[in-house]
Amino acid sequence: MEFTVGGRLELRISADDVGKRVSVRSLTGSADAGAAFTDTVGVLTSWEDGVLSITRRGGQSVVIEESALVAGKTVPAEPARRRGPAAGVRELAEVAARGWPAVETARLGGWLLRASGGFTGRANSVLPLGDPGTGLDAALAETVRWYDDRGLPPLVQIATGAAGGDELLAAELERRGWTAERFAVFCTGALAPLADREPDGRVRLSRRPDAAWLSAYGRGASGPAGDALKVLAGGPSVWFATVPGDNPQGAPAAVGRCVVDGRWAGFAAVETAPERRREGLATAVMAELARTALAEGASAAYLQVEPENTAARAMYARMGFADHHSYHYRRAPRG
Image (cartoon, rainbow, N blue to C red; front, side):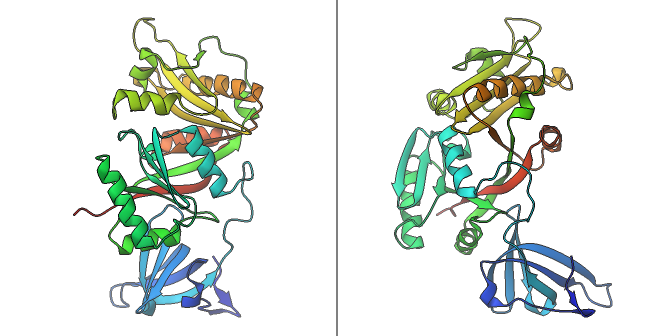
């Protein structure tokens, strides 16, 4: 990270750069206690009263005292080189919403309100796809009322780390006491390489999840069963994969879900029984689902994974998936 011009550190950002992606270096600690430099990259979301707020790629907010700044500059809105299919945050947000459809939806200007009895955050949160058509405070009040009427916590899904992200909205929500939770990474990759292996006869495909599939899905018990099934089976063209266990009447060894929507194939619910891990079953499940998606005309793939799930992230990286952006949820304050 280079901040120098002619050998001198330079501060080349100001409050006028709010909303831009920046890279700053700040000094932490005192000279007596052994001060250290800290580098921060993200979107500058505010600069007021001598304090900066920067939202990092993963969605975490960093507060820096102006007096601690040593150097800073604006940087491109996203890396110049990115592996994977070309796509923007808006396109991916919309295709993912169609692929994991909420049981009930409502429009508030450019916001999509989603409810599904509490089954997963993606199906029970606001997806901000544009201006809500009214002031932010009025939109948030309507959002809180809508979710209160359904006995659900008001949540807003926030995308960060790529051009077209919601960092400024996140900063406004944070100022109003909406707290961050449930961080995730949205990954994309080419579809064909996933299917580049011999067909695996152990994997069985179906159009709807049966009781065995649901028993293996880690979140199958969350929310009303009817709502969960509607979300899981919803979408343009949905496929479920199952690898039976050693006991055909028992729980499956592995399961997975894929939804095909135009050029996109979305993978989710890839689960392997703990005692059957490291046998390549997750790879086999995704390969058979990818083969089916290719036959339906898809060419690109996406999935979402928790950032702390290092084993899954390493597996997906080996399959050719790369981080596209991150997202998290903002929950309304109580009371």
